[in-house]
Length: 141
Image (cartoon, rainbow, N blue to C red; front, side, top):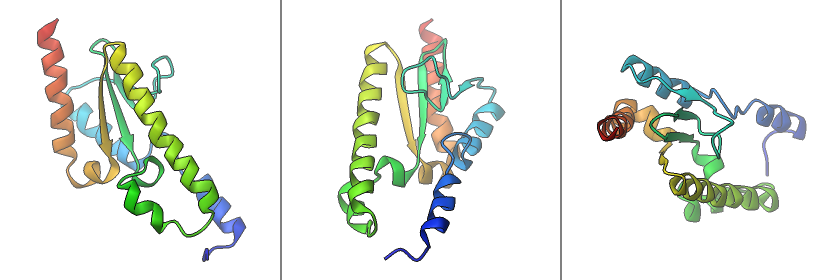
């Protein structure tokens, strides 16, 4: 049973950001500090990556654990309310993430996805991965 009233739950869910989230801002700040210049929430790139290096064809996604199904086979059992809504929604998000990855890779993009908890616990390591791919693409040109 949900501990919040429907009105309270509605207000909480409206506050969930789909861009400029805490994890995105934290990650972008680290990339900017390293001198890596990017575009954010690029609508012209399939899947609208959170961070994109257009010339290098690198797309970076910062995925929240709940909405993108981290450890989904175990976590879906944790959903207690509105299961008929949330389970199909999250499973569709998981499928869409795979479709986006496949489409971008077919177009020659390198796709990097990071979980929010990865970014929060070790943003430098995540940024190292992006920087490594960025430098490799720079060498190839």
